[in-house]
Image (cartoon, rainbow, N blue to C red; front, side, top):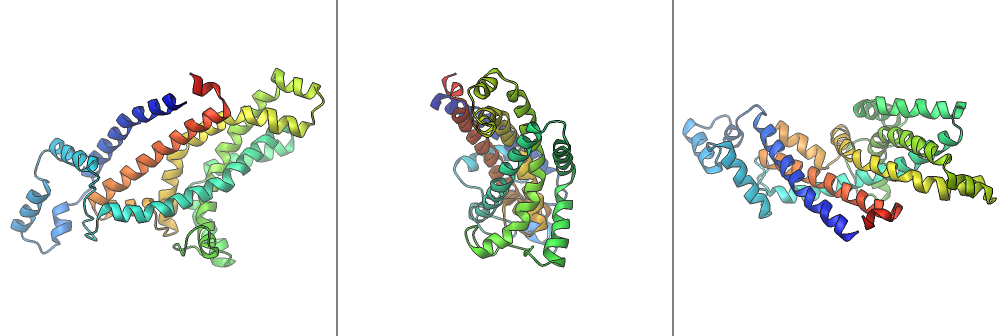
Length: 313
C-alpha cells in the first residue's frame, strides 16, 4: 500500500507542473498591465518601465515561468500587488474556510446520496426509484449559482432562517454553523445527484451477484445483506466518483464562496484575477491544484480500505 501511495505521489509531480504552467499562461491572457496596477494610473512611463524591469515582466515568458517555479520550490509565492502582504499568509488564512466548506458539504451530501442511490436500487423500477432519479437529474442539471441565489432568497431573505453573507466563526461554533449552512447546502445539492446515480448503478450490479444470493440463502435479513454485502462492494466506484468530482467541487466552491462572500481560496482567486494580482492568482491556483491532488490521494487510501487487493498490486 505504501508503494502504491508513493507511486501516486510521484505521478502527481508532472500533473502539478502542468497545472502551474497552464495557470501561468492563462493569466498572461488576462487584459491589463501589471505595472499599471502597481504604479497606478498616474504613474509615468519611466516608472512603469522601472517596475517591469524590477519584476522581470519585460523578460521572455519562459524565463518568467522558470523564475516563478524557482520561487515556488523555495516556498516563496511573492507579495500581493494589492495589499502588499505575503501571498502565503493570505492563502493560509483562506485555506481553513475553504476546507470547512468542502467538509460541511461532504458530511451531509455523501451519506444522503449513497442512501438515496441504495433505496433506488432496492426499489428498482418503482415510483420511489423514478422519483430519486428525477431528483438526481435535477440536482446535476441545476447550476450552482442558481441554487445559491434561490437559497439566499427563500431561506436567507424571506424566512430569515440563516445568514447568507460572510463567515462569523469556525465550524464547531453555533455562529459558524449558521453561517456555513447555506453555502454547504448550495454545494451539496449539486453533489447528491452524481453520488446517488453512481450508487444506484453499482448497487444494481452487486444485488445480482452470487455472494449476495448466498448471504440471503444463509438466512440473513435484507437489511444486513444490503449494508454488509451490497454497499461495501458498491462503494468502490462511488469513492472513485467522489475523487473525480473533487475538481467540480472546488470549482463549485469558487462560485459558492463568491456568492456568499465566504472568505476562502476560491473567492480570493476570483478577486486576484479580476484585479490582475498575479502572485495572488498564481498562489490560489497552486493551492487549488494541490488540494485536488491531495483529495485523490485520500481516495487512493480509501481504495485500500474498501478493497485490500489494491494495496497488494
